[in-house]
Image (cartoon, rainbow, N blue to C red; front, top):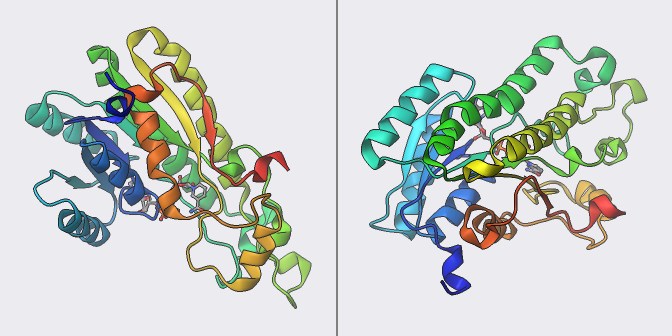
Length: 277
Ligand SMILES: NC(=O)c1ccc[n+]([C@@H]2O[C@H](COP(=O)([O-])OP(=O)(O)OC[C@H]3O[C@@H](n4cnc5c(N)ncnc54)[C@H](O)[C@@H]3O)[C@@H](O)[C@H]2O)c1
């Protein structure tokens, strides 16, 4: 197989949780570019429909599966698994991408309630449920199929905040008292560190079963944040800028394909150097 051909995932069925979100749709693009079949799971129907319609314009005649699904609901995942197996006979990959990702940067409303001492228990529990329990259930339901097939790839999406602590200074707003300043909530850090534990556990657990499990850490995505925030965060990044959503698909395709056949349990960090500074 030529080196270039190692990046092909032709007709492989790849499940992407949170597939209608900002990065989820870029993962779908990676799968389409590799000639695979993306299966997008999301709780919201309208964005799913929109993403599918956009991709069908860009990639006519290709198959894109979408399911309105809550990844914290095991029976919902099992029904999707059964339908996919009936239709395709195999499930080849899973990207655990869905997570609650509270936007606390400049321009967003002040979320003083996210401070550590008063973070509501229901927010903490919901963040754990989506970011960790959801990924755990998807690995149980879809990953176990890969174990039985003796073939499969899982990518768990973490963050630079799975490696370092948030620098809360970049979220500070002028004129707001310290105790009311918004912060990136602790639950986000815990989920993003936790998902790496899931990667390492399963990477060794399934190492001899043909199932590879790795972590991808995106960071600092540019998404219309205000100038002040962009400047503050850019100063923390050696490359001096935020990332673009189009800077992820090539790495995702590498991680999904035979091109990365000897990689398991690894953490791939795309952060412009932020975590080494
Ligand atoms: N945006 C960033 O700057 C950034 C940086 C580092 C890491 N990440 C990580 O990348 C991933 C995607 O982030 P994003 O910015 O695209 O977020 P996003 O909010 O745009 O997308 C998340 C998607 O998950 C879906 N979702 C939420 N709960 C769900 C559930 N129970 N079942 C199914 N789907 C559910 C949402 O509807 C949404 O479409 C997250 O894990 C996030 O932590 C993002």
